Length: 413
Ligand code: NAP
Image (cartoon, rainbow, N blue to C red; front, side, top):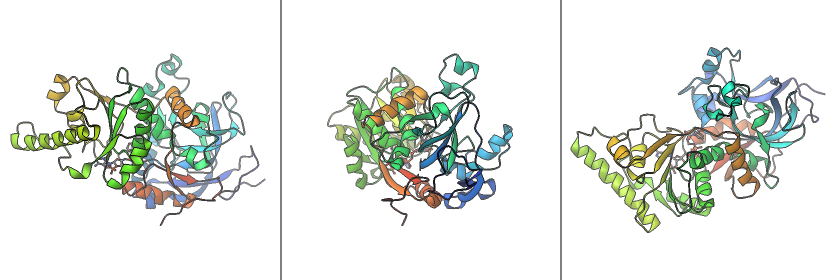
């Protein structure tokens, strides 16, 4: 038995080496992804009674570890140290497929050898509010594993709470299985977690970034229930991809220039210019649909650049549901439209066990394509995050091979 194995060389099942390879972020390297991620040898994490140690076969790539590497808007390492954690490093990675390698004494839902995917919702399972049956997403203990926790999936082993483990779809490769759980579960809660605004048959759903990670899942989830997703894109070469997933049509946002924060409402000329842009965008939705209907649900995440338009085009009584502010955090809302048309602006964050499992069941049933676009080597972890940072990444979701065999993968140009 060795105390360190090379990438792709699996230890005997259940043997946990003392050290492992990991892609590590440190405060001194905060910056663009190609700088912030560096391969290191580091101790293998120890697990607690409710945890599982998973041998990572492949890891999914998400925007959150672009943010972690930048050290902005939150220094995730400093934030954890303030809460008393001893570690001065961050191992990112909030999506994984792999094999359960060790379990804690209290664990009953998985056993050593199980092939799993991991959802990224973690919380204190003993907290009173969680035990009382409240949505654990509202618990103060809630943390995104691999972003707000130290031992994510960009490593040979990852420490997870056992309830995060879900069955891996047998029909998917390790890398395809690793790709969709974070974005898919997030999209699931956004579209089905905020009654009465759950997506229904025939609803118009406006999906920003339709060819992105979240967007590609939102289109499929909406189309699966017979809704009419309209995808927003920035390049016509994304139209086929979105339509194949179930979008009724696409709008190229580059045809408009009214983005960004709202002008002061007293500035009539500037307000008129914004309104003309937003109205033209609304007409583009009608053109795609072939009828004058507004979105009952607007699936938001760009934030500052797009929220004013989202709230303008959202139907009376509809909902703008938002999980991010990629373009900025000051999202202006013209309150006149919000109250007179009784629209709802709803924040949403990841998903609870039930929602992650419901999403995974759709993957198991083959009803969701994980939209794996491109697979990278472990030493390319910084490179694929850099593509994402520069919005040059391919449509859908990317993955990184860790323990899985390397056949058939593409490499970065
Ligand atoms: P992604 O794959 O990069 O997709 C985002 C899409 O947004 C891009 O494909 C891009 O599409 C579009 N976009 C970029 N700039 C835009 C702009 N100025 N205006 C309108 N659209 C723009 O990223 P993702 O995985 O979908 O994640 C998106 C955001 O959600 C990130 O900030 C991420 O951290 C966050 N997120 C939050 C949660 C949560 O639980 N809270 C979960 C998942 C993701 P086009 O250029 O084609 O328009």
